[in-house]
Image (cartoon, rainbow, N blue to C red; front, side):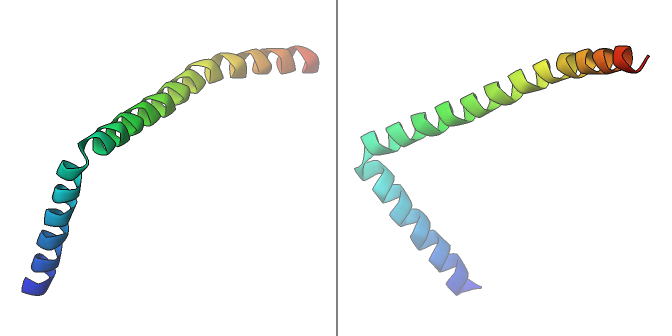
Length: 67
């Protein structure tokens, strides 16, 4: 158990040292992740909003054709 804890604490120490040594790279990576997540959420929301109306329209048009 102690070896696992030591491994993760060493990994965390190395990761934090790398982040603080390369601040610009870490900042740009963070901005890229934020923009990527925001774009995926925006596209998902726009698809979710537009889908029900198009489904209703296609249901109406198919009802007219079968009637």
